[in-house]
Structure formats: structure tokens, C-alpha cells
Image 1 (tube, each protein chain N blue to C red):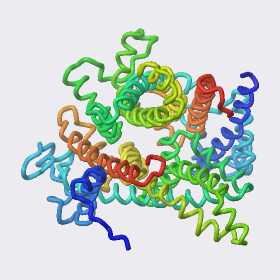
Image 2: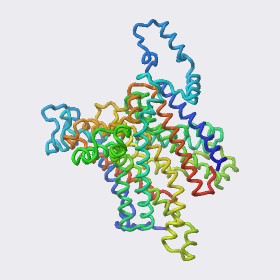
Image 3: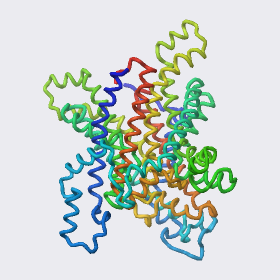
Image 4: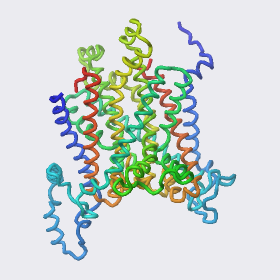
Amino acid sequence: MGKFLVKRILSLIPTVFISMAIIFFLMQALPVDPIHLMYDTEDMTDAQVQELEEKHGFDDPAIVQYLRYMKNVFKGDWGNSLFSKEPVFQAIADRMEPTLLITFFSTILTMVVAIPAGVFAATHRNSPLDYTISASSILFDSVPTFWLGLMLLYIFSFKMDIFPLDGYKLIEHYGWGEALKSLVLPCFALGMGHVAGLARQTRSQMLNVLSADYIRTARAKGLSERMVNYKHALKNTMSLVVTIVGGSIGAMLGGSTVIENVFNIQGVGKLAYTSLMRSDYYQEQGIIMFITLIYAGMNILLDIVYKKLDPRIEL
Amino acid sequence: MKTKRRMPLKNFIKRNGRMLVGGTIIAVLIIMAVFAPYIATHDPDAYDYTNRFDLPSSEHLLGTDTHGRDIFSRMVYGTRISLLLGFGVNFFAVVVGAFCGILCGYFKKVDAVLMRIMEGLHSLPTTLLAMVVASVLGPGIEKLMIALVVTALPGVCRMTRSQVLSLRQKEFIEVEKAMGASHLRIMLLHIMPSCSHYLIIRFCTGISGTILSAATLAYLSVGLDPTIPNWGATIADGQGMFLVYPHMILWPGIWMIVAVFGFIFFGEGLRERLDPRLK
């Protein structure tokens, strides 16, 4: 397992390096001049501006700038926001509480709803319940996340007054109870879109597994239907389910931008949105780096689970 | 000689039910997009400050928005953009992605470089990547199209590549090679057709997702000029006063759900018919 982990982590480095290169070079193409955002350049002469550019290395070729940026990132210096002048990483750390909690609870919600639904649909194939689960999963797939969020706000916060309307309540100020209460709707809105896909994939994978030879053997040797379904089939289904969950965690982290805008939550996603809107590209790069790293880390964790479930897998 | 037997209508509906339902919704949407000026009851951009926040009525089928614009007409015109993006993005994603995928599966050297880039793209958060590309390129339909193609590309490329890798082992390709066929001939005449049904499935199942992502970006006012009527922006416009006038986002949302549902249903039906793994 140790060797496997090291190999897995090492294989990540080039991917992260390339991902960030793509983002870095895209940001270079933004039609803004960082010097004018960092300093009040109105009263400066061209020579002074040039001097500042040299000081920050903005006149170096893009590839040199990129390598320097990555070097600093690994040293822990993620640069400063062009707008607030604060360290990029600090801004992310201040806002990551709601984002991580939303992603975590949405993932749990997705798994708790989707996996039993998919398994049930597969074991009761072609029953009315199977059709109901399939149809409602397609229906949920069609619902735009932001619209679902707004409707939930209207019904449960405005009309019924069960959940707060005014965004996220920090644990530090309001305690866990209030904080979790303010996360119910965002998690539901974000999670429901992924429930559908996961339920469908679980169902089709479970059906695949149920038609395998070893299932027939298990039945032939007289195991109860329950034993066949839950011990033999489910375990083999789970290995695929784990990879899908990994993919949806990435989508949820990225999707936090949308959901945090709808619910007016001051999280990393909202910060990514405002930073992009005001061309604060150091901040934006930092956030994408942060999300990519978390996503990569989550995937390593899931690979471990995957290997535990199915030791034959070579990664 | 074999004569083709006609399938009883009942069986036909049973086998193609999903595609029929989905296809009907898609047909209505296409008609709406093509004949938008005849179907829309009002000018979608006409401000009318005496009729703001009107509830749905026979005059304004889905009511009016903050500026008194007719929501039904805006949604009808918005269909044009949604369909254009849905079809366009997936067409280009499938064509370019298949091209990259075939090259990757066929040439080891290309694979080493191109697959790395695709993996790099793949591990970036999709929504954020699309937002960044769209803001770098600036507003415009064709630019938003590029942004969405970029996010869809890695998936298609990876799928085609794995198909090509398994096809390369097959006898009929080996035979072609032994007979001295050129790489281009093998790729175009043998590998391409063998992948084609996966690509058609990918094209159809991708449209629903693209329409949703495009609406999400428009909702965040990234990528499209918000004054051009489109589905996402209509909901964003209604957001400011929606607690008081929920009809401004309720009906546009349901409209979108029906449209996306149609595309998913059609795609799933098609997948069931075409995908050899499901047979």
C-alpha cells in the first residue's frame, strides 16, 4: 500500500503542473495589466512603471513567470491579491469553511440517497419502482442547480421561514447548530443534481454485476437472494461507485461558485467569482490551485478505498 | 430474398418510447427557435414600465419581468441560443475530441503529449474553467461556445482513445496493416466508423449538459451579453425581486427543465438502441 500511495502521489505532480500551466497562461491573456491594479500608476512616468514591472518580473517570458509562480507556491507563498493586497492563501483559508462543509455534506447526501436507490432499482428491475426511480432521476438531472436553489430559498426560507435567508452563519460566531441549519438548502440544491447520475450509474453497474458468472454460481450454490445481492453484488458495484463519487466531488467543488452565489455565501466559490469579475488573477489562480489540489487529494483517498474494495486493481 | 416485415405500431412505440417523447420536445424547441418572431407574442426587448411584474395572463403568457419585458417572448428567443450552443458545442467537441482521441490512440508520441494536456484540463473544476476561458475571450456566443468545447473535450478524447486502443488489437485492423494500408486509410475507413456510434451517443447525451452549463454561465453573467434574451439571464433578471414575484423565475425554470428533460430522454433512448454494451 505504501508503494502504491507514493506512486499515486508522484503521478499527480505532472497533472497539477499542467493544469496550473493552462490556467496560468489563460490568465496571462486576460486584458489587464497587473501593474495598474497593484499601484496607482496615474501619476507615474513610463520609466517608473517599467521599473516596477521589472521588479515584479512581469517583463519576463510567460514560462519563466510560471515556473517562478509554481516555485513560490510550493514554498507556501501564493502571492497577494491584486485587489485587497492580502495574501491569496489567507483569503482562501478565511472562506473555506462553508465551501468544504457544503461539498462534504452534499457528497454524503448524494451517496445516502443515490446508492440505495440505484441498488433497489437494480434488484427490482422493471418493477414500477424501478421506473419511478429512473424517471425521477432523469427529472432531477434536468433541473438547473441555481434554479433549484432559488426555489428552495423561496419555499423554505421565505414562505415557511424554516431556514435562514441571509447566507452562511460562521461556526465561530453562531455555533454548529445555526451553521448547519444555514447549509441545509445549499447542500440539498447542490447534491440533488448529482444524486440522479450516481443512482443511474449504480443501477447499471449493479445490473452488470448481477449478470456475471460468479453471481450465477452464488445462486446455484443456494445462497439466499439477500446474500447474493448485498454481499456479492453490492461489494463489486461499490468499486465503480467510488470512482463516480470522486468525479462528482470535483464537480461540486467547482459548482460551489454557483451555489454560493445563489445563497449569498461568502465561501471560496463566491471569492472565485468576484476575483474573476475584477480580474484579480493571482487570487483566481490560487483558488483554482486550491480546488485542484483538494480534488486530487480526495481522489487519492478514494483510490485507496477503491483498492481496498477490489485488490486486483493496478493503478 | 428477405422481405422486411413491418413492426406493429405498439412494438415500435414500446421500443422507441423515450426517443419519441424526447424527440417531440426537441422538435417543438427547434420550431420555436426557427420561427421565434412568429411565435413570440411581444418584442422580447421592449421595455414597458407600466406593466412591470405582471403575473401570467392571456396578454403575457408567463408574465413580465423587472423591466416589463414579456417573459414568454424572451424564453422563445432564448431557445435559439440554447439550441445553437447545445448542438454547436457538442458537434465541435465530438469532432475535435474524436480527432485528438484517434491520434492519441494511434500514435504513442502524440499520446504522451496530448493526453497529458487533456488530463490537465480534466482535473480542473469544470465550471471555473469555463468561466475563466469565457472571461479571457470576452462576451459572445462563438466565444462561449469555445469555452464550453474546451471543458467537454477531455471526456470525448479519452473515450475515443480507449476505443481506438481496443480496436487496434482487432484482427481486421491487423489484416489491413498486413495488406499495406496507410495509417490515414485505417484511421478514416476502419477506426472512425467503428467509433462512430459512440460519438453519436456522446453528441446526443452531451446536449442536455451543455444547455445547463450555458444557462449557468449566463446566470452568472459570464460569456453572453445579458441583454440578448437567453434562458439563464432571464432567471438572473428575475432573481432580484423573485421573493415578491416568484413567477419571474418559476416558469422559465420549468421551461428549462422540460427542454433539458427532452434532450436527456432522447439521448438515453438512443443510447439504449445504439450502445452494443447494453444489448
